[in-house]
Image (cartoon, rainbow, N blue to C red; front, side, top):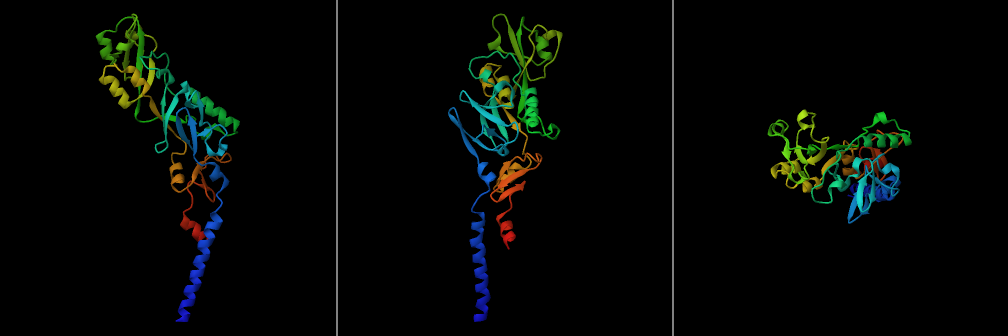
Length: 292
């Protein structure tokens, strides 16, 4: 009987040694893991959670964010520096990699007269190129347009300041709808969900203006005949960031924090409690076997 108890006692002591050793060796988290913890960033009346790929000022090391994804708070509004037209950020949705943004020219209410395209564009390319050049990284390895429209966004084309009313035939050909609130002072304005076009029939109008909208907002615009044009523009639209979409969720689900490796920019850098890994952190079971 005693001979049977001895092996069990030895095994129990071994398990006790292992279980007591694991917390000791994991008690101090890796520095990068600690410094890249999500940050609560107050801006105006809102608190925004900041984590990869975004950075704000010098609150976290550069390896916690991706080059060019800098956010800033100005006049109580949150902005992404890389976006054109100073779009204000209304919401950051990490689960779908989406920013909900609004053109500030459309937030004053009423019926604004757009004078320029409200699109994301070429500034993004030049800004990201500059950032990568400062970090001595070849831009050929990157998607230089860090934000793309989501599938729920479409462009509305406006023809504003037309000097005379368009004929019914022209409106029918180009699927145009009148904007009553912008028809004033002898000028007439129209909208369509079709791409902009050059035509003699539209020569009496100013240059077409392109406004991105969510499909639901565009449907509302069509449904009410443009009566709530200002409110529809103020509702904004969504853009999606592109970096980390193939691996960052897996890193976070494994208990890690996504990051950026300047010496190897294409690496799926995952900062774990026990150090840097690629793509995901090892499971606790893997750590146990590594100790045996």
